[in-house]
Image (cartoon, rainbow, N blue to C red):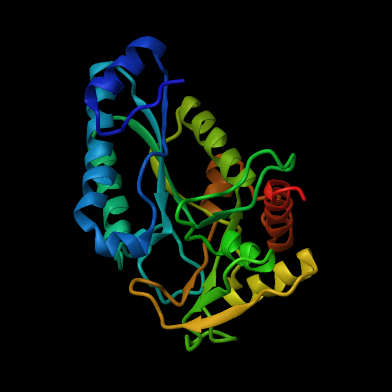
Length: 276
């Protein structure tokens, strides 16, 4: 394993020289949309600059295949019930803008590529060995589980959206389904598939209140909540149309119902709790 910064050209050269990859899966980047509003230049340096540095290293070492970790944030707040890949690119945050810029760089780099536009990745592997933990934590599923396990109350950012229960609706995809999409994308490109951007989600919407209810149901514990103001850049509804990914990659989500997502995450967080 090589641990290095994606903006470090020398480190990328050394890694490619040592391992002679046939393809690259580019996951490196900063991901907090709210934080990107405060640190837009940092996000552009890492997410756009890092992608440019990686593409240049790939060119130097003759690596012509790339699967890119993009985001539904490139779409902004589309009005459609389900978002298709040819929806307008209109990001609301610097984070979304950096992902859109990175996609443009990749499309012009002369490589064969698939850009996977993630919706909300969540959950943990079935063994309970690998799960989600950020510092600071910003993702809804682990924050709701932490509240149920005695941590700070879970904040609902905005309860006045034009949605059935007033809270934002999101499409959650299990990390195992997301990983499978990457391996399918590599196989697709290896078989001569055309470069393409694809949505990867569950194809279903879950409101914030419905997520909280799932944590209560799965964990059998109350989830203390508090209501806060809307955050800059939050869209009322982001749900994927995943038809193109199914057709092109032969992929479909198998574990992305909200109870399975929460159950696997709950088990992982419980395993990490200090033993009495």
